[in-house]
Amino acid sequence: MYFLGIESATDACSVVLYKNEQLIDIEYTEKPKTHSQYLTTFIEHLLQRNRILVEQLSAIAVSAGPGSFTGLRIGMSTAKGMAYALDIPLILIPSTTVAAYSGLEYLSKCSAIVAGIVDAPYQEIYMQFFELKNNELIPCNDPKHFVVSHDTLLPYLEQNKTLYLIGKGADKVKSYYKDNFEVVAIETEQNMKNLGNWLLDAYHAKNFADLDLAQPLYIREFIPTVRPKKSAI
Image (cartoon, rainbow, N blue to C red):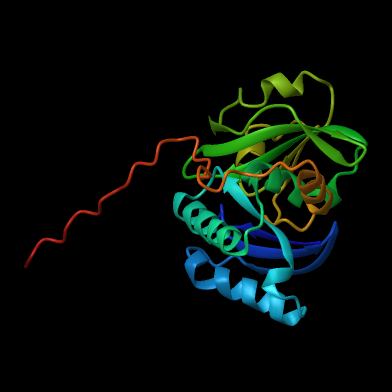
């Protein structure tokens, strides 16, 4: 079985190709606001380079949010369009889960608390907590929006375990806990390179999205901004 995974919830844009749980290839860029430019090109490159026909894909996975509103819409529409055209399942993955798994190879503890973080403007982030057990991340809660403060991590610091902050925005949170050596920040590329087992389990469990109802997980209400008009001289 072949799985295609799309990540467009952050400034980075990436596509991964799996055969069962084994990563075959990846395309990645951190150039901001280029999702519409690179996404379909990345998909074509991956399939052509590895001599895989699009009809051979068993499922499409997409980072569903929270994150960049524009990036999420581009990723979701691309994933849904392919799933519709190919009549294959769509698998939704919270972008905070993608963030947490992006740093999996850096975790040195057999038992720890992990926070998957997606950055947002100013002192805001999206974050989800996991418990690390035998190299697997067990969700403790759903993704939430936070305004970072000295109280952000308090419920999880009381568990006497190392707390790993993973994702863009990890340093923003760590800045409030500089003297706490049990809080470890890992800012790493956000992509689906470590999600092979997760995807395979989701596929066998038939954790598929309804293509008619699937939409990005925004968490916060989308409020469009209007730039002020330039005054005529």
